[in-house]
Length: 338
Image (cartoon, rainbow, N blue to C red; front, top):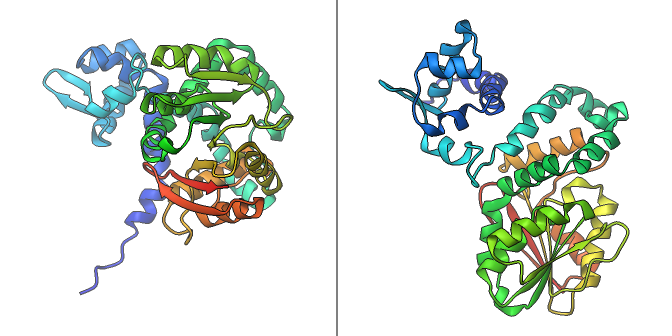
């Protein structure tokens, strides 16, 4: 017998923003950091967070039902996952990217229909304030550090996988293009003591990179190179890496950056591109496809792409062989060999 059709999946997906905003508001208010000290009663946590009595119980119980809190005779407490990943005091905190999603992406996605019909960004570009957003971000060292740490949080698992899965024994040098805090370079250096690496990014990023790689213990083998990969060549290295870079740009820019990477590496060298690579059938990696819609919201021409797309661009640039390898979650890497 066939299972009867129900609208459950339709309704759950259509109203999924309820659960999303409940979690984002909990992160915004620092709930999981507050509970990192131990379970607390409804009145205690409600008072400290300033929750209205009408809202507090439903809010906390909803987080229990969603699996982000547990409730016992002692009150409400973090789950193992929220305690590890949503406590702001822990280095494993990944909430930074969700804070950005809450403050920026959540309202912009409310204009998705307009973006689908116009092809135009719906963020600060729409109001002519884009420059002000990034000027403010890069002018405030604390805010910039938090933003770059958020980028590390969302990519750390993939960075560790690349550090172990790629055949680094065949190479001696690498450059991480758009290095941000430097976690990809740091994880590669930690796992491969014979390597020397360079992180390329805008000059304002230098103090954050240098502090991070020093804390990890690989500052003696990693160098920060200030620069703009649009205005200068990529420095020479055996391996060039681009993590969460290409999807920001239109097709001509993607091809230009791949060509610059080709010029930077010797024969036998490699380009490693990674992000939420869409499956070739474009039917399974929902996160990658939704990320491409996010690029529609956020950029004038950016989009995500399949492994076959990227391999074709690499071949066009002159790479002789390519392959696609899964990393963690929705992320994969596309490798091109010169």
